[in-house]
Image (cartoon, rainbow over all chains, first blue to last red; front, side, top):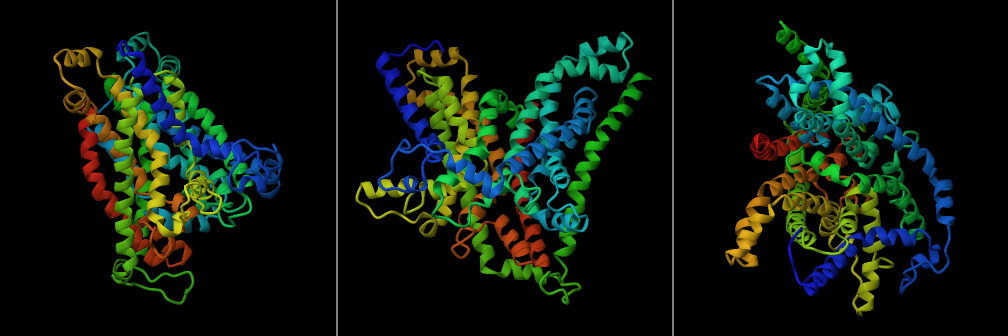
Length: 276
Length: 290
């Protein structure tokens, strides 16, 4: 960043950038302040910006009405569980593709990515019926399984792009020293791959947390995640803007914080390493 | 024979992932295909048996199908247009020497982390509601009649919400690409007397081409399946005004309990996605080697 520009140009760009950024952020900001207003103030016209009567009642009302903590717990179980399960399947696969590639490795990778392109509605009905018959509807393990399957291609791809950059020489040196293959993985590869595995984990927790097709169609009461929790607020509109804002804030806060911390790693993950 | 052993082991290690994904892809797809040729309705269990092409004729022949197909294309195209142009502009702006760049990046990326139903509800109630939404207040402030967005412009409203969610993604990817452009190259162009427009046209844009391809590719995958935003705002209506193919299948198969017709819609959705995918995979394939 060594470009020299006049101070007035810099001020101009800074102001413009901040105005646009705050406009984009305003829906989230508005939700944040509305969550602490009373219902009457939330729909007052003209609106107040900061809450005149600061209240936490909305949060307790939301907890009492729809049990936020149960849904948040379900979201954590499903997003973390599916990511860990995905990593267990994906790490060996990505390892072998990165270090023992064959002629077909690239085709297999492309095929895996293509499963991600299959629209969920194309398989919704059979999955719904299979789940109904196996009594997996509205269960956490059923949902975790689906979430693992839909994110598996992304997990494999991300790990593959990270693993590919680990120098093979080091692995060969370990092999010369007589390391067993399993030792090779646990003692040499894993420590070097931990940063890549960590950001894969982060991105997939975020994706699974925000997944809103299967969570809505396959759950009702017991196994509902936060996406299902928030969707239950969609029908009776009007009287509860403040409570809705409180519920929204509760649903997005954990992942918003996680996202802010990991935004740099996300670029690589989301582009399958094609933009660095 | 270490290499042979390694190769066998490599295959074994890859097997679980390949098998699991293969089952996940093939079993439901074959079932969808099978159902699509059956008379199968949960409301009318007496009606069974082979249906021939009846389900397809029923789904594709209905005016709602054509409208959903057009809506799908408008939704994907509209969001891509807004996010790619807006994202390029924002990325160029954030790449300038400005104060608070780090914080700005975090603020701008935020909408991407908002789960779809929350994004839809925030916009529906906090912004687009004619009575107490922010836009309603703004319209009243200027003495205008507040707009009932979801009734008057349902598809446009959904496009706005989805574009808001994806603009940060496009911006972040394009900004990352932009920042890898070497300073020397830019300065050389500046020295040669290229003006801002020419610098953008001949240096910056070609450099960003690949990132733009990636943005279009990844967004298209997700945009073809837009569901929650429609579910919690318009419910596909009024009529079929904001129903896309994904929502049409859900409406037919799950809400109307017509498994046969819903499956036929699902098969059509898969075919459309595959047509798009063929083009997209070629683009990725090219980018893989580099």
